Length: 177
Image 1: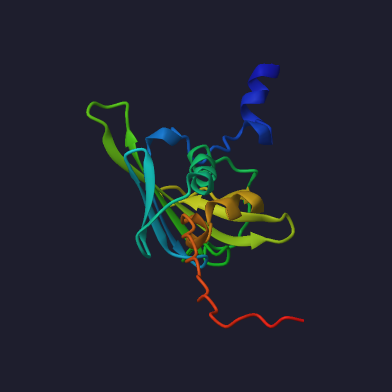
Image 2 (image 1 turned 120 degrees about the horizontal axis):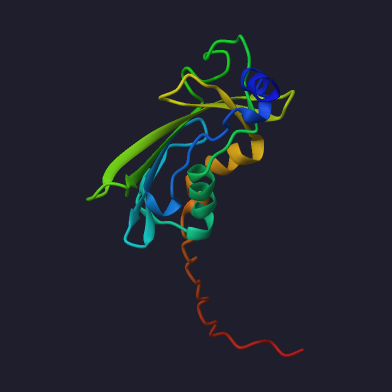
């Protein structure tokens, strides 16, 4: 009796909060477009390169948190609401992330992609509304996670060394005191 009733009254913890389950090593690129910026990064050998809005080397320590967060993205809650996708900021989305990766279960690896739509912030719960483009389920992710997934492209770039200024040598004698 108890086992059968559990099947029909599954508690909240029984719903799968997994949004993405991708091996981070299989990710080959990210495309981000929306209110926090538009940028594209692609894996080039072992390194990552920013290809849009301009070409630049990427600081791995700045990009890896984005990759790792996206690869195993989990919701903190479900958005059980009657609001429309437009009201949630998901149609059109405030931010659209396309993750490109290789499905290594097939031989040769097959190129794949998934799209995450990030919407408005729910100020009551301090979370953001998100959904996969290929699903009707609307999730909520922590504000910290949403901020991690949408960095400014300038912050990803390897800092360029500032030019060293050389002062012209002053030929005039120094006055004696």
